[in-house]
Length: 259
Image 1 (cartoon, rainbow, N blue to C red):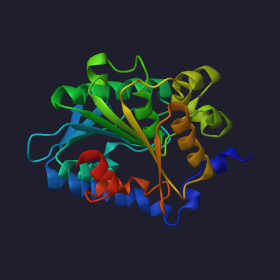
Image 2: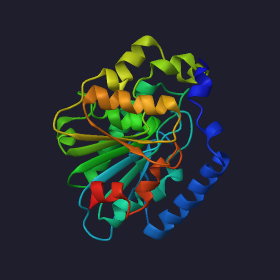
Image 3: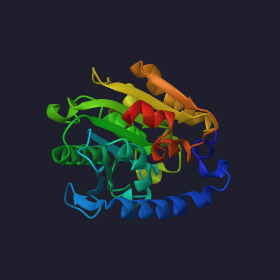
Image 4: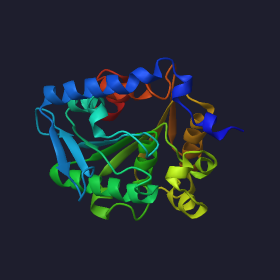
């Protein structure tokens, strides 16, 4: 099996190269539209910051949206528009950046996202929802595991939505990406959500596109099976547009999560 090809998303999406510049343009426009608080620090480092977008009224709670990019690329500036649905429905949204491999390992990124969730929880009261895409799906799933978040913050989380998550890191050791990810057996065992027990009392909904690469459908199913949680397969959606529901206040996903 060609593992690089199996985990290659862009090669199988028409117009894939157009998505990142469009995301960046739409995100910048939405930040201006909403007067977002940008670059709120949650640690020491240029990338350890989040943007915070608040609704016009007192927030119902907090959504933390964690971006993907195989832990290797992107930052918070590409994704602001995916806060739109939550903000329209009255939620505040924090969008963190994090340091990237090979500068840091995935286990370190997990701790950085935990710090970001903690910091955002300090400035927005109420229930907390977590959603993340691809590598971000892995990271929000890790927030569900014991010992990652302090009890006071974990107790506020009501739902987690891993979107097209990488729930089992072991196959990535067979890809060329691992030259930068530097995964080994021990880290895969410690950082693969499907191999770890989930906290009780938090609803988990795994979202994946029906037109995704087979391995991403597998990864989503493995997590849903391991944790006994719901899985939604979005018809007609691929790896890059499955997140569009978070930009649409009228989407079924938005109404389920935020209304």
